[in-house]
Image 1 (tube, rainbow, N blue to C red):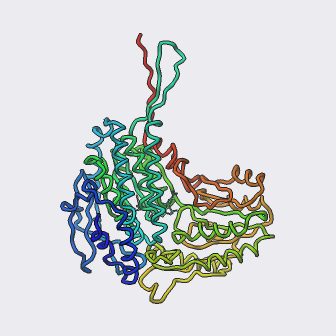
Image 2: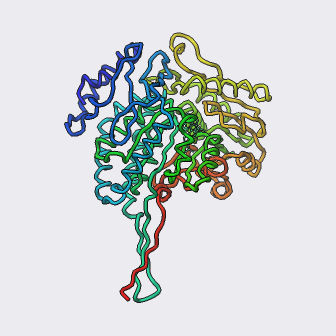
Length: 538
Ligand code: NAP
């Protein structure tokens, strides 16, 4: 990538941000390596049209190794949530007929891909990692403009995607076969994990690079072929990932990319008889529907869904650390992580002091366009998101909770074209009210006060979801009890609810997760079926 191409990325970015970034991009430019082999080669076959504003390009589906239009002839747009007048692209509003072609393409590529060598797959992913590293800056800019998160958060997400990819590639060789010891002298036995065939990957908008990487990498390493549908809020960075995989050498038909409304094509991605597994991340509501459709033809499902994550703070905790972490995990990415802290459960004796630390911490947050370097919290992802969060804030007030900070839509020249909201803190929250029970998916902390550790544990577990939890204390006994009894797929001690690493499974329990979790060993296990083999020379 050369300097002009990078500067072209800034087309459509607001003027003031553009000026700031030009200076920085010049610095970044030094770190780019021009490499003919990694230049985008599909540009001539991809239709590039101008939108009515003269800015946005039209992007196509990727089926059987070709960039193609939807048979619908229709497109949809993905506006920048920090400036909805900026449209990043026009994307194919696909139909079941398009999906049929994508599934057929994945099915016909399956035999060659599954019988290919593991070394070849490893090599392709090694090249993909290099490309991701090389394009990190470009991808981070697009991610911020498409999803709204700050540039720093975008960098973190891409770095995390690279780590997930590396880990899943590295573990495949070890995991896909396992020696056994026969009880008989004349028998040799071992087991292998075999690919399933065609798998559907359906992803959300809040981690539009990391979540697809975490699913597609193990699916392909295991020898499956993929039909990938990104969330309609964030198709561009999903498409960039497909470009990278293609340039890295993934053969035709092995990865197929299709954009469109989940409500229009999602059903077929799950119910199609050739689809052997569905890996989905998104809301519990859609996850439950997917589960029931997939069960009709016994397709495997991996569902990663919403959370309502508690942080418990005991009287002996490092309160400053806990308050910083609560606000970090509650407001990073505008509270739109599935692992965001949304409930803060405090022992009564430290409650007043802790709330005042929380307020001080939240007041430090600078809301704005994620492209501005001084912004620490970007907009929420879209108008629907904004309305939903504001309606929960109104509901919380009606339910008797006390809004002590924030909670309003931000207005004024810095904010008028985007979906910006003040981070909010509620106190006097009763555990049974809706804002304490339902996922708000916004920067809203609900503080609950309890009289004992036992009560804190009960409140922490008193929800239908079970994604992540954390406790802050120096007391090893109570920390250990919390770890054992917390009903969550991820539990932390003196770490924020959002903390995770790629080598451990990632997923929830209760209504937050179903099927083998992503990442760790189960990340690849899900995309395989087992075969035990016994050999004898009789
Ligand atoms: P969502 O509305 O459930 O959408 C997720 C994906 O499913 C999107 O690609 C969506 O497409 C698609 N979809 C919608 N209806 C469908 C249907 N009937 N059949 C098949 N697919 C369908 O969720 P979201 O708003 O994008 O994401 C936010 C949610 O994801 C939150 O609840 C969050 O907690 C959860 N999440 C969980 C994790 C985790 O690992 N546990 C991680 C990240 C996010 P369209 O975009 O076209 O509607």
